[in-house]
Image 1 (spheres, helix red, strand yellow):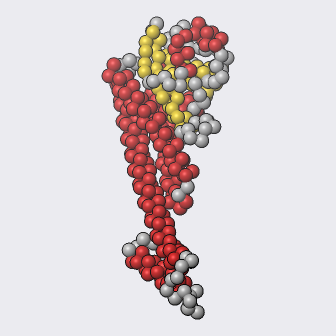
Image 2 (tube, one colour):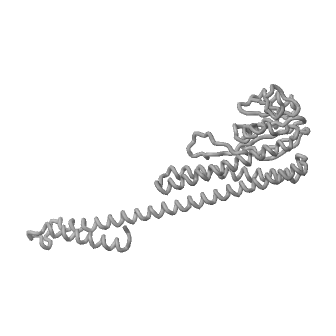
Image 3 (spheres, one colour):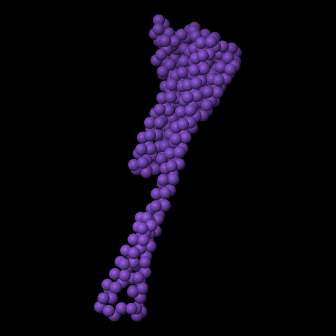
Length: 312
């Protein structure tokens, strides 16, 4: 689906066809006919539109036929039905600067473009470079918000794991760890993209725009540092819980071994007195109580010894 937006008297208006100074936004579902028509209408290489469908497309920029093409990654919720998949993934946003319009292509529904649309009435479509930088800003904000959500989920699942020691919480933490891997990879690539845009002056930025881009690079670096910190904390937490689980298993095995020893020695005494041979006190009137008392005595002594060694 193709949407055309224009800013008229500080109001966002959706129009039927592209005009000078409009924002063209492509959202799913896509049709090949729409790609062909838009490519011919706006004189955009068809490859630029098709590349946006690849979820694994890496952040980059390219110039062809005086049309600038930029790919940047943004976070999105993962709608997979697999319980082992990450909570969040990263998807590409393609930004195309034509002669008179700015075009964005989203392979999935994402919050960054929605935020940009909500503030579009404050934008100046004729200042296309600043429009691109504002999209970058919304993407960085999206990363920061998702990182805060991830940290809150991590704290919640860790607390549940302290209380229950169930496998479900470990699975949830693993899904968070996968999300952080996606974020770190995307943030690192986005940071390199912005630094390269600043170094090569691909967009032809003025002094104000260059300073704004530099601020975005700093914010992206901060988001990347946050993601790395959360990843290190989560890794340390999982390692600590693995050690705790191993230690608890050793304690359980130690208790079970102690109980086995305590039960096996009285069983040895009773089995000896159960033999069909002459044994001491076999003809006594107290022959039944002797092995019972002897078994209880051995059990008490062994139990006291194990408790002294703190095996229980």
